[in-house]
Image (cartoon, rainbow, N blue to C red):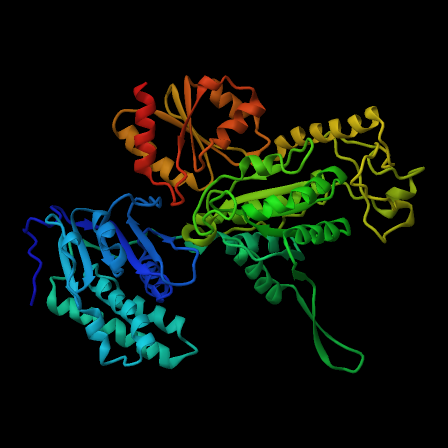
Length: 616
């Protein structure tokens, strides 16, 4: 038996219970996702706060992929900067992976082959398990052996960190409930890895798990799933889309939900039972066509949306301008990824802010919502449909790949059954009858929104929707004064929408001269960074932007601090630029900390960036 001596040089000095990070280094296309997700979900079901980040390449097979799990009893979910345990299963990245270990950490590797000398460190503890050799006889088919080797390392890890085996067994039963053969082979692979670790190493390691209650009232889910659910609860019945990473699963999930909740059973004239769909989900030939379908459905009275990413937003620009100018509601879900051009489709950025805020040629401004996690994907997507209908304009929800495709632990969803949709100013036949004549753009209310009608309801409400120059009555014009009157009202309408945008999240200390402003998925890293800085005596206030146009409270926050540091994930400081453009802020009041390499931001990066600024 090989025993890890807990007093050895390479060992962590103090046990870390429910507070450590692991990195799984694999080759894309080898089925590692199943093993890694099994570990993540089992930790969650033990009641231990946990987060997972999937860092995968955009090719189908062969390139390095990593999966990172962070266990943190305090609920910190940002990506870890260093790791306590690395599972090195990819010979291409051994050297790189070993360097991500903390001093005194543990390296689990397949000892069927000797670890290269350059991949060893004197200050870490190697855990060699001959995974390939152990799987040779039980699984003679080559492809099966590759896949189940990963399940075997999941078994070894579960022994090393003391993962509850009853929970693991239940998860296997759930995953392979319809395939007993796969369930049996996966169970055997898990047992092989688990028993080898228990027999040959001192288990559990000082870094290990204990059952907790830290996930009470929480669920584990990804943002694209809850975006689709938010659209369902908002009453959406039409979705048009074109496949694109990382947004494809929004439409796919919406279709599954509609098939379950948007169907009606009835008996036809022949007495046969049939099912009718009360929805339409259409895969278009491209992103422009998808948004065109959404506008047609919205103009006809349906609640409709499309989901895409940055390249799709680029293609949609002219159609977005049509919706803005002709004042047709539309919801666009932008799950942001790294650009420009094709960029890195499976990496994360927040680099679509300016594109979305001013999308299309000419003078345009759009309503934007910025969810920070899957829970807000649900609530803000539902809100987006109300905003689109109320203000008769496109609303863009800017999620990102980290939120959309990774599993997050968030509070359980709550829905108010008394909630009623805000359909905005849609005239009924009775209201039309009281008008001498219906003129589409002639009666703005306090929010500068005019009334509209739905086609087919009343002949008096018929109108022609123009994307070309039109006046306040809806007629064609190229007269400067008439054109200006329309676009001036659109600008006023956009600004008026600020009172209905979600309020920013603000946390104030005791008179700190410094503030941090951020948005979206940066929140977890920023809040953790603030906690560390406060422990060192730095008092820092916090504001997270949740919508555009900006509320007065955001301007007040900036003006009430000597300096505000804007933390975002893009190269060109787009949130800072948008704040300066829209609020007229003195540029010296806003500094930037920018992360744009494609991996989710971590708190160490934020702390280092803030310290550098505060030195000045």
